[in-house]
Amino acid sequence: MQVLQLKKRDTEGREVTVGVKVLRSWHDGSGRSIYLHADGIYGYKDGAPVRNKAEFDVIGSKIHRELAHRWWDATGKELSRKFYEQKESEERARLDDFVINDRQAATELDSVLYRVRPKAKKGEKKADWGAPFAWMEKFDSRPDWWGQAEKIEMRGFEYEKADPGAAETTGNLAANEV
Image (cartoon, rainbow, N blue to C red; front, top):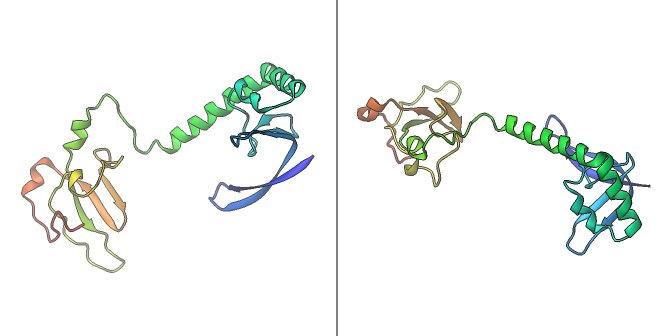
């Protein structure tokens, strides 16, 4: 048995080193690797199970490959399905701040206007909002929050969805100064 040292992020985002116990490992020339972990799971270095049965082709020994196929048929397939469904669900929940609505035409989001002002530092008076602008005036591509967020703060600026009638409003910040 071998203990591999692996760097991971804990729940608070700090990088920690953990030991991963491995019984066997197989590698091929392309850099693909499969590990047989001490808990009996065939997977990757981080302990995640393999995604499909075809990945066992990296195992050169016919006998070991047959054992891996038996594990896959007995428990691995279901374990892998559950593991990757949970991972996808967690990622979806993490990214759920901004829901991409495929039914909503992209042109509807493109037509939304925002106003911007510098974020006030502690003790400073807030600046006036700038003139409404389209995303194309300040960004290379439409931000994922565009058209979905009422207000958002980022990179030292506050963005607020503009009322359609607010185009005549003037502030002390020109639309192209950001």
